[in-house]
Image (tube, rainbow, N blue to C red; front, top):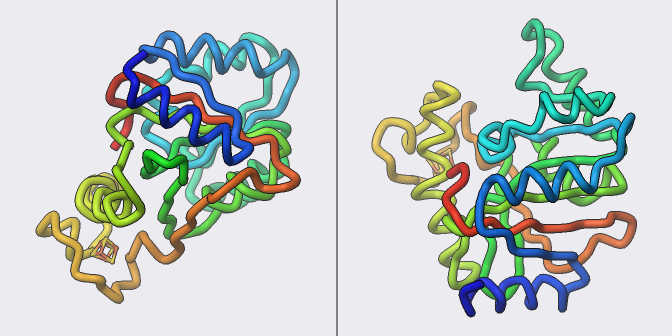
Length: 204
Ligand code: SF4
């Protein structure tokens, strides 16, 4: 493991957040599936990383119930599924950024994803590609506004300045997707929080 990644893992652990490093997506899949027992319910937040991991089928094959609003059968089911996911045994998501001193920085438009990370399911596993690493808090927020928000806004067809120009102008748009910003500084007291740091690009 590169020294930089080892430092990030140690920084997370110092904050009471479990952390491991795996070199690739296959390693992350394996670690996830080892942690989630057969029959568990698994909520998933909006996450390109978890989608790229392609673990849904394997979880279903273990008899797990997967609750993910991205798979809602109709638009009116999206909100109920977001809320149900917060009552599952496990919650899976990524993080928009991870600082080198172990802080997890996220933005959210609805708030369900950042809520699920800190107080909802008792076990939370965040899978974070090394493309999400940032030197410090300022760099983390910069990366979110420069890389995560424009790409997500385009994917979701939001009418925000960042979708049109790739630049944040601290908008007040009704479609704004960064209504809530969270910084996880340490393990939330009622949540078993773990980060799987993956040595390749995942999500954005
Ligand atoms: S404030 Fe507006 S323009 Fe800036 S990142 Fe958020 S949604 Fe995009």
